[in-house]
Length: 137
Image (spheres, helix red, strand yellow):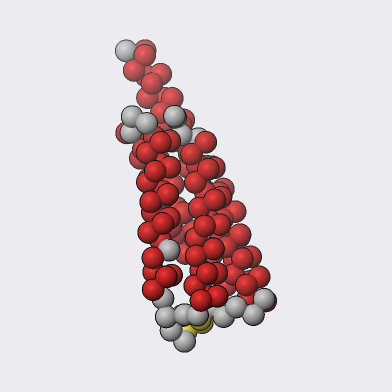
């Protein structure tokens, strides 16, 4: 009975650490994607899709939403997966690749598309390793 209680406590602590780290990484990624978008805009890259402007803050908001979805996935994997780190990294890499598909087909210029894809990669480069480090191998 004691071993079960310790195991439950250990996995709860791991989930808490994953969530805390994930929220911090999400904040950093949101700030970074806004900085990349603002830098691109200052360099003369349009932030318009189909003629509608994307506000710089929109990059941060969408980064936060999708990063937090990734944190939820990580927390679930920490609790239920046999190899949470491996599964999380594979899953999030696939999701990152899929996330650039809309950018490729977007109604925007090549530089705008490249900037949009760059923001996805920047967010992934911040969030995935930070969260993965908190997951059991």
